[in-house]
Image (tube, rainbow, N blue to C red; front, side, top):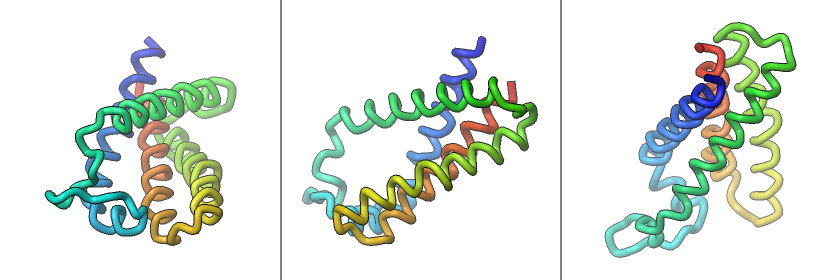
Length: 131
């Protein structure tokens, strides 16, 4: 049952990411410098690899968060969301900021990607504790 919980949590975060990046597509493309095709979408938008890697990443994060929550006193949806928020904001987002800083990327990219990491982890944490 715990494995199903991890899958549902990963799917919740992945689905939120789809909405997040659709809403912020133009600013994200500008900040990331991704190549844009004639249709205005990223040139690699038909390549399934980024989507597969994103789903696998969400699954890995959800699995590790479940493990951490099982070894810590996290026992409510609020605690799961709060701890997920902290993981996204204080673990993942600083790493994104460091990578973007060294790559010379605009801080706006860190805000977009870090925002997704923070809210996505919040969603994972809440879903993990909902079951």
